[in-house]
Image (cartoon, rainbow, N blue to C red):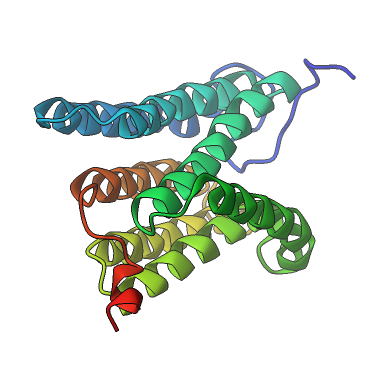
Length: 224
């Protein structure tokens, strides 16, 4: 496999040069800003929250990886882009199950495995609808699904999950629109994906930090 093979899948890119996607590349600064903001909040906590710090670090890595992909735009930089995003999704799902539902490690592992199976299987299902954004639809669905469960179980993290899902829905729509609107809007819309995703990840991290000591969502069932 040629790891330096050029990849051109975004409207803004018209040639293989380093700065062929200036807006897509520079908009990754939103991830760095989001990580810095979340870190400033993390430092003010009385108790150090290791999992939240890991999520914050991943947001910064996502920004760096995405910058590499939108500048080098080849196979190896594509991995630098998608791997940190995937890690964040699975780490956050595990944290949500442990922190919001108080799942044990075994149940958490099984749930993550089932989500992974669903994600791989669902990508082909959603591709005709959203094209190259299909791989992110499962993340939206699990985000909204967890939010629904938390809402009915009266957990304070529900509002955060709903807000994150709403922002991510708009973000996904703008990512999907990038190539279809290219003729009318040569700069595309992908940079909005970066900006709105930074907001989405910030909201998710706030949920993890601010609802850290909330009672288990399942307590509502146990007391019902």
